[in-house]
Length: 200
Image (cartoon, rainbow, N blue to C red):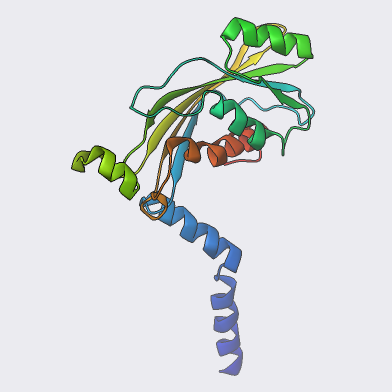
């Protein structure tokens, strides 16, 4: 009887998750139900890059529809912060550029790839008392949303290696004083991990 009890106990403990796995699962569930910020990335290809690839990051001049006006170069800035942890050779443009200008600067810098981005959509909802006093519109209450489009281009051949669309939405627990651009940093870091084959 004692050995049977010991076997059952071992089997039950073997099925338990580690605390870090439980925390990751809880965070995933909170994001999925809309309590925390959430993003979804759709890639056109599963192309992977080597860690020593030199990537030049630029953002287009496009101003997103949706009533929000994010900083002009915010996607390139956030992409740089996310990529520099995984790709040691990464540079970014100082200001928004057109595609041809970006390719020229990337070639001049000696980069293997150009990551060209734009903020395709940004909806800054009411998230503070000041914003409510300015707008006073019930239909504007809620969580922020945004869409980013990315093109990864080989600089020498102009070959389009990958395209991606990242759709983000804020969470109910993080909506106070949030902006659509606050959603893009973690998603761009996740995209960098995926390019190395480390993401899901």
